Length: 424
Image (cartoon, rainbow, N blue to C red):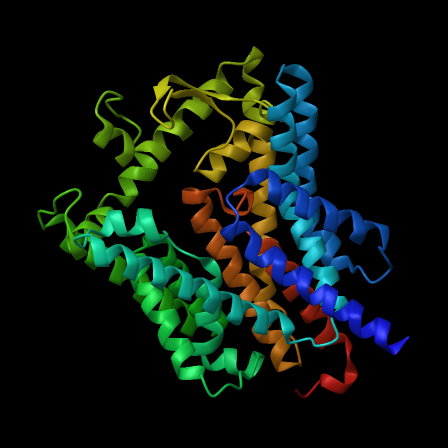
């Protein structure tokens, strides 16, 4: 019996590690669909009263989005393949949160979640640095070409750095390894060579969060105000400087930062000019999605969206593959994606989800680890508030954040409900 428990614990650890690593490592959406479907089937077959009110409340808004999208699809015809894809994309964050909660609850070592985040982050950092070195050995340095070849970012590395570099992270999980300095160095160097705006901002958000600086307190407002002033001054500098598109080195990275607001919000483009197209692509996608919501009977699409399987008409053959693509099911802007599938009702539900995560920071917990976990959950809410504009957030098929949210939610329950840990 004891041997069976050990084997089961090992399997559960392996499954959690596999689900964290698979989305950024395996590009096939179909493979990831099969993986989470199989694990979810097992989890639901073994569901128990362990699931708490906090978990149910948190996933409820995401379930509402899923149900609205299904309801809306009644009024619009779509292809079966596109419907299946959307069903997965919309169900994925719910499934990941539940699976993360379940696996962490079953794994004996409650700090395993942090250990697997760190080692997975190191795994991806080594791959990224090897690819970067290989590329630089045969090519001149160019930011965009390095990123295209070696990778554009990995959130696991960000979470690993946050745990290892912050004082609160050391309370949450005391990482003992004689290679700790080497591990931190690998993660930092990999982080730098991503040259990623998204990863950089995500690190700042989560670092402020784990230390409790995203709560609306005097200290929190001081740090948030300092961050916003720094951003304003930085952009003032960027717009006073002539930066060349596609430039080598740091100039190319700074140019991408400079155009970031326009890339998200400025949708006026010349579709024949590929430079202009890619510099404003996210905004163009979003604009077409919202326009086509209005172009529905009585504009009801604005209220409840066009449902699962609905496609955004780009109104030209976009050079996304060899033959060009005119109709797309997913969007970079996650808010536009939610609105297109589930309307403003879906958007409102998503904002409720983010608010519920964010308000974790205001919970009064006696346990120190529970307080830090709540800080981190609130930071994840702000993190998704930001990246949903850029890479569709929890609805990105390669996003694994739901696993971490579910795991942290269980650990919060574990540390607050176990009386022996009150003074930890």
